[in-house]
Image (cartoon, rainbow, N blue to C red; front, side):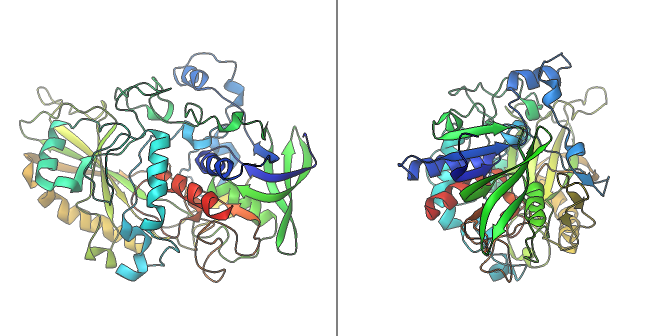
Length: 479
């Protein structure tokens, strides 16, 4: 380390930390000592692509499987994530719809769970900023409030998408996406290969290709291979960050501490530090996703220009959310969804149905005997979500009546959606949450806990754009 003391210590280099630092550096013109600790290494996209294609790479040893980083008590439930520089920006699939305004007011509108301590309007400007920074491709007309054009034009519709858009208007749109619809600085155009975790043409936004240059700032000292496992407290302040590097324990002092690791590790760090907030590590989970295959009569579903080609909101908002979960439709334009029947290969569509879930205390994160490896205990879905599936199956045939449907085939729920949410929920006080609306810990007022772990409830919409906007909001309102 260059110094014994830092003005700001940040854990992680994923979306949450990167967008927070972007705004922090804009707000603080005076020279600061900033330390960023990342448990992994820099694993370049070109080398990740070699590994993906089965080619040798000198960087292969840097890849730490997620299964080795946690103790997963439910083997039927998966929690894939990427460690190292850029975090999960290296493995996400680039889906960036905004939340709906109602997602922030679940209790007020539907009597379900609790309202967030901030609303859609508070995040609106930061949504725009995040969309610009990611060069999002999207349509002009959306079901959520938004004015003007996205930075890049929308991806093109498939034949099925065109009919559904004509039928439902802005309740069926080209998905807002961080997969570029045309070449932009540092990125090529998506060509719908459906291998977005490691994009073959680098069309998807990542921290590495972002052009933000955050970690090149001379104020920032970036240390790789530093695995943070706990914090040292004194009264109501965090004084030191404790981490392991090269098999040895270290500690470093800081004025302001930012936890920007994924929710599993943020919770583990707090619990190892002795955080007594009853919600820390609790209410952990993600949305539930299941595939529906739509067999079409004498209609070929051709066209489209990306993996998730469109989003349908026909089952999302409404009075039904008093009783069962919202459902966001993702239309998949993947080459492996074909009919294995002569002359009918393209006579089908595939929908991913994404259901919101609720934070349940039965699903939680806790420390293990190894301070570096948390235990993840996920045992159940909410009844609210399961009722949403039943409602979807009743309503979907009518919704698709504008198409020549032969048959609907419902597949089993997927073991994961790649969205790690909860564990440090946001609220108005320590009696109902871990952090406030600025994502500052209710007790430790020099500690920020960023990311989707702070979500009060789990929207049906993909979380990444919202957690990035929240990081911008947090830094803008706290310094």
